[in-house]
Image (cartoon, rainbow, N blue to C red; front, side, top):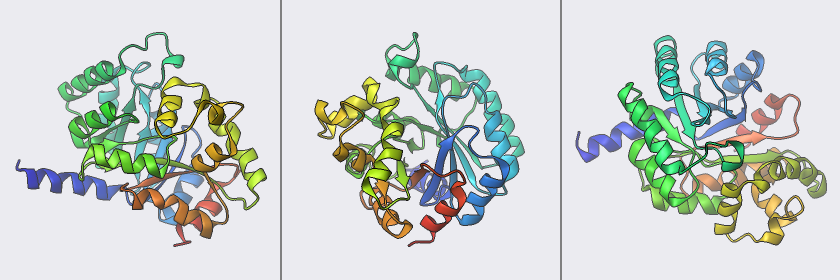
Length: 285
């Protein structure tokens, strides 16, 4: 395949994601919510967490008609790559072209086996290669430059979590122009700064401000120990959690696109029923 053909091949997969998606934890998308997100016009549903199986993926695919579904992420430490590859094949058979496998090394505090994540992810990808999971149908959780480069070399692209548009700009420079760059962005639909921070701060603080890989990435972006202490400074929370009306939130979210992302995965916080708020955001352009 020529370089131009490779670029065209990547672009066709990137297009499947659309410019906006919705991020939530496994089990957070009952059938009616999944259908509502699809009907609102989002391109992708991201299932976050570290599941041992892809059963939740199957449920969302079965509840919807055409929307892309991606994992954000399957943790390499608590899943067998050969078994995940078999589940991928079954989903591809039943829902052709709709599922993308996002994998990652999680964080060292979560597992006693955590060692040399770059090598471990590479080995996991080796097994996926052997089992026939296509390179363009998988993504990597990536924050630092080494993992970002691996995501460009051996997958469709990168799915950074808990980042800023400034990180998106840096990540695009590392990835190059073709790979998918799909950051997650937290949102609170509240115009009151203190009320919005009261919703967003606990979701940032626990567990992320106590995890080495996320803290290291935030420090690379210029945040200090003082920003990270005591649940996060107002400046840190405001940088990581967009707030306001749907009309105010939409351009804030879209800064990721301006800085080089192909797609941004919106995580709406504090809403019992996320569909009305998500619908308002996607319609606020």
